[in-house]
Length: 117
Image 1 (tube, rainbow, N blue to C red):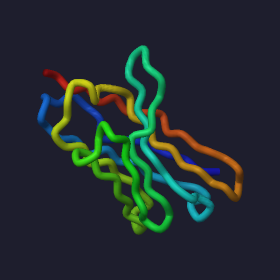
Image 2: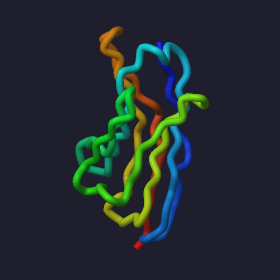
Image 3: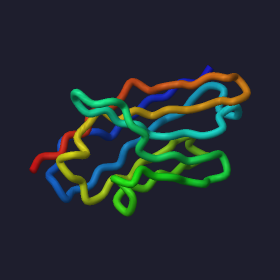
Image 4: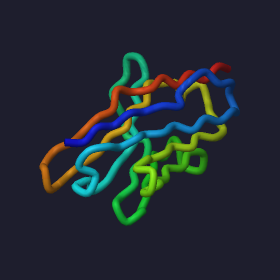
């Protein structure tokens, strides 16, 4: 079992920055990759950024060049640094982990990010 706890959301003006954190506990060694999703009101949940166990990353086109996903293995934490925020980035952001060994996925509770214009 894996537990994910997000933090770092809040209200920020357009052009500002936030850093989201996802603390991971449990069967960490079984995790193959982790990512951040977001869901805006009335919209489907969408993938924002992904990081694999070997550190490879991938981003949605809408956030490339502005967001950076990273991981600190010593702290069992994954981060999402968000710069140059836009009102359209407003959403609930979710941390997500995938274990192919356990054939399971895990979700955090979500953290609200609101960007004012």
